[in-house]
Structures are given as structure tokens and as C-alpha cells.
Image (tube, rainbow, N blue to C red):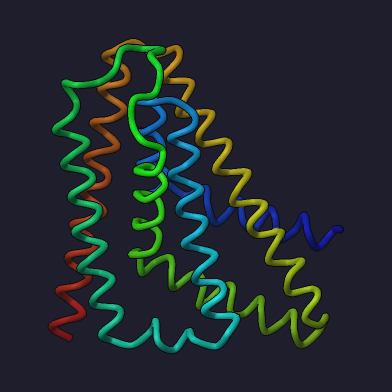
Length: 208
């Protein structure tokens, strides 16, 4: 049980730094409330699960090929800039404070999934940190502990997803219209900024 909570804390620590997912959660939560912010994080977690399974079944080398790295940087650039620009374009169409959700939950889930799936930094985590955890757990504890440690990491990610969704939805419930616009504007600019960074990394990958 101690090991489970240790890896749960690791999952929280890995999710907490501000990145595209947290920025998108703040925007969705401020606009549409808790459910949409939570679905963004849940979609991202499913992408994490996919990468975990690829590494577990020994397919990690495919993700680290130059072609795949470049493809993910480019596509990630497109997804983030597109999402950020759409966020900024819709600033004048912010729903009133406390209004009911008006957007499909599937759209929020899909956004989170694509952002995490096309994030090469996410892949580096799963290759580096989870890969080493996998090797250490198999060597010292057996396959059963691999599952237990993995569940701990995902419990931490899920808990942070809930915390971020609750924080974002509090702005939706209690913030005024100007506050919601400011949060969405900052989130949109952040997403565009991450997208430009991804584009720069794709350029470096192509020219190196």
C-alpha cells in the first residue's frame, strides 16, 4: 500500500506542471463547467494509457524514430495552435456565468486525447520515467507490482484531473464575465505558445 501511494504522488507530480492539458482544462472549465474540464483530463489520461501499453509490450522504439518524432511535433503544433486560435476567436461568445453546458462532452474528451497523444514531451516521460519504473518493478518485484505501481500513477493523474476541473469550474460558477474572458484569453495564448514551441522543435528535427 505504501508503494501505491508513492506512485500516486508521482502521478500528481507529473500532472501538476502547467502544460497544454492544464491550460485547456482552465479554459473549458471557465466556459462550460466541471464536466468539460474533467473530460479534457480524462481524454489525456487515455492517451497516457495507450503509451503505457505500447511501452509495456515493447513497442517504445517505434515512438522514438526520427520520423515519428517529427510527425508528432508537427501534428502537435497544428492541434495546439488550432485549439488556441479557436479559443481566442470565441472570447466574445463566452457563456454567461453559471449557465448550463452547451458543448458536446465528446469534443472535450477528444481535445484532451489528441493534445496528449501528439505531445512528444509526453512520450519522453513514458519512455524515460515509466520505462525505468517498469524495468525496476519487473526485476525486483515481479509483474504484479508493475500493475500496482501503474495503477498508483494513474490514480494520481486522475486525482489531479479532478482538482484541476474543480478549480476551473469554480471560475465558471463564481467569476464574472471579464474574469472568464481573461482566463480563456490566457489559456488560448498559452496553447498557441506551446504550439509554436512544438513547431520550432519540428523545424529543429527536420534540419538536424
